[in-house]
Length: 361
Image (tube, rainbow, N blue to C red; front, side, top):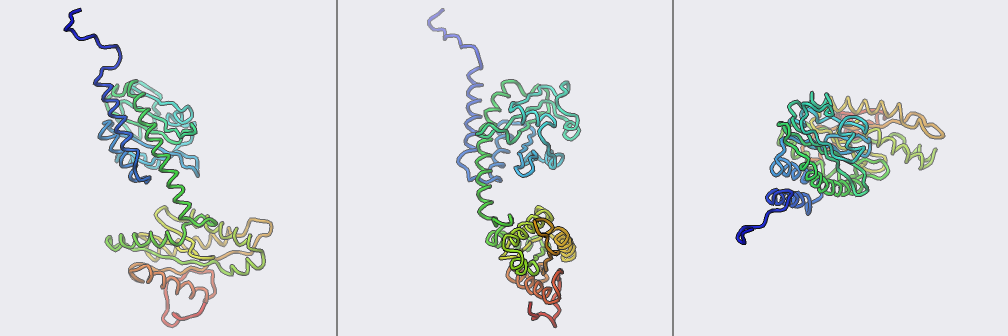
């Protein structure tokens, strides 16, 4: 060999490819680490990483809902969210479920000739040529999520990509897990321990932002203040443990009966407050009447000694007709709540007749 001839390169990946791989891993670490542990920031950075750095055409991120055990779509491209935003699955159902059960990535180089990609997935999201499904694994080894990557051209994902993107997915999993733990701790700090609904402080902070939004959008917002009827008698006759059980049951019933955009908090004692964005007075009254009916039918029916029907009284106020600030809406809802108490309880009040504005409870 001539002394001036450079030595032959060792077999394996070309140096340029290895440098590119290291750059991708470094970029993934930078985008996922050192961020405020908030979902919206993390998911925005995941989108930047996948679309701008890795250059995938589409992605779908599914995470396990701890309460239901379902894996639900949390993030994805516009087409993915429009077509599959409400998709959810349990383990044992489809290719993503197989990834969860085995904890191993699945690569489909050419989806046209591979039957592992379910027909339902093809129908929801047509035009996928190459498909890669990656597990997101917590430190305990449990798979808590799946990241699906799509490219329209067949054979555009390779076995090398599978190994490289699995390392990137491990970085994402660590960041997501850290964010979810932070969010869980934050939820516990802003929720009422007994009822599971938000606490008063969080509600007051949140409704201020929502009122600013509806003022700009000129959309309605309903505020409901409700109070359990004869709650002191329940405590006196059946004990405080029974009273706590009733409050916990009411909190669960109200949470289940509201939309995701609504906000409910325990305002004090046996009093709850509910914010209903983009809701007219008539729609809010129908909802509260339905919740009252469910309360009467279901509360107090469990336990060693079933109680007489449990009811509540509610006062409703609407933005902007009844006020444009939280204090004004609250004062109006409170006035109508106590008018309802004076009129016999077990009802929803939406107006304040001038002759009865100063009625005692």
